[in-house]
Image (cartoon, rainbow, N blue to C red):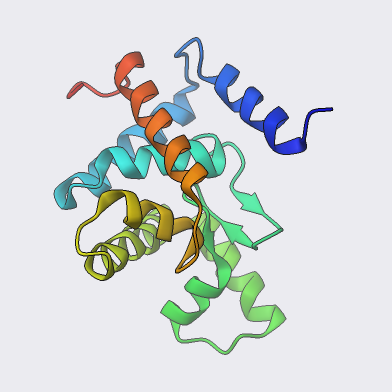
Length: 160
């Protein structure tokens, strides 16, 4: 019996097998890359958007809860905004992350840069920490690497 995760992974793999993207997904690819590239996180930002939201198609995860193409937690947005953590403010922060791609991308990049300092530039540990904090999630890193390979093979960016 397949687990929900393996079915989701199979679905995610098949979604990008043809290398075809919607115009909206293409926009997220180029935005993510251009936003992260000045900090050497361009491909990483695109790969995270692939993993977290299918390149912007599913920008809400009620389990975390996280919002945006990069799966940023609502609690991170509340902290950044300096708001009290109340149900109403969580809703406001989530809506802001959905409405303002620059705010959301900024939170994602800020998180990567913070972990980059904490992890002394070890890219694998930075990506793992983006997802698991001080915990461990080697599978997440493997999926991000697979996503980067897909980005390059599909030639979604002129640079590759």
